[in-house]
Length: 421
Image (tube, rainbow, N blue to C red):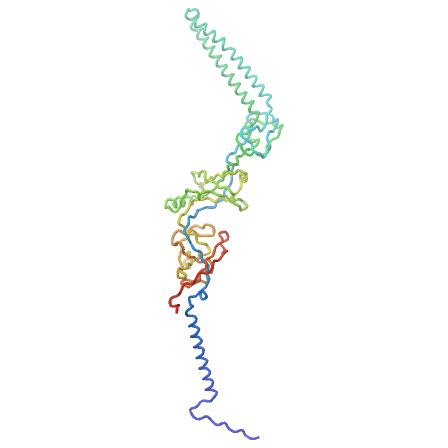
């Protein structure tokens, strides 16, 4: 087999063709990459501050307002008036004269006790009165005769004194008999048991035919006045001191239409009528550190019954020129301080420590450190950091759930220095 011809070696100082070709291709690719990168930078530079290059965040514009300061506390309803009905004389109950569970008026007849024995006592007292009254004219005439005879020394001074005593005794007997008649009449009237107050009457504890005694321990029934109705609310002494200090410092006002009391019922619904505070106890319970506030509510439909558990929302005052910052906008820094992210007029994010007070719904009450019209970030916090350029979109927060429910059109991005031309 013939031997192939040998390939001549390249001249000294030269490289193989394929090596030179590879180097030329690499240089060309590098040059194209540099040009492409430069072109991208030139295209991106004018639009570096455009909305497409910035993260979008949702903001809420803050404005000062008068905020009603409330405290939600548990309470119990109680009747404004309560009267237990008991007999004042003894006897057999003949009739029940009311319908259980209905409204009764003061003075309405409720029970009828057998009056026969009391009628007899009343008649006897009237007869005794007539007998006593019959003694008075005779004693009076005798005294007048003795006064004439004493001037003639026909009777002694002792006889005159006895005549005067007899008349006074007869008159006293009449007065006692009149009192007995009045007592008998009162007892006879007590056989008809009447309502001492107006209100709703409970069921009857006894039925006709039952024997009752005067001032017995068992009440025949109970009447409760339900309109208006009271709500007893425990309040801590600490809250009372905080309230007084806030009023003295001018941060709260305790007068005006916003200062009232409302109720949340057991099923979570709000009672439609507002109430007002009646009084506060003058002592603090040593075991619980609380005192009782009593509020009064109109109850025309008898929706509230005594003993119902309610949540009382007490208007402690009104904080003027305050800001409500959504709670979802406030976080904590490494020092545990409450912070929020704000968007400046230039579209930059700035982190700020806020002095949060008490919560009002899904917001924090802030009295200082915020100016009118400032924008706080409530949505997209994870996409924003201090000093970053962002695109702010105004959103609306649901006051009940604290969630974003509406977004407005995105703002126009502020022009960046040097972006024109």
